Length: 121
Image (tube, rainbow, N blue to C red):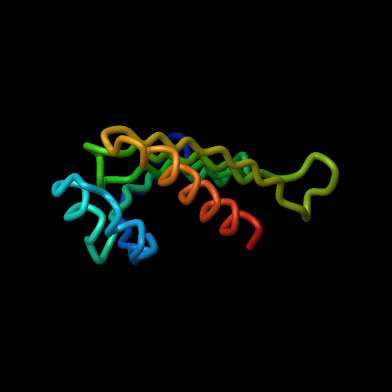
């Protein structure tokens, strides 16, 4: 957008399915088993880069397993008030699993643990 200087992007990302094989086999629901066995997970990412204000906001949500889970993440990168050569990074996410019975909590805990490991990196 030439008037605001904001660069907007929307894209689809493909990630390898990292759910352990044991979680893919322990459920009694056929539809969930087949959903968990997919080789890839698809995410939609939107980003807004504001060069004038020196910040970027990103929103990501999962396109795979929407009938069973909701996963979203919001990230903001901005110039630090403390030092203009530093970047302040803020991230928050939400995970909710439904329709998997007793596995809801197990799948949520796995997803939460996996995402926390990624944040540490």
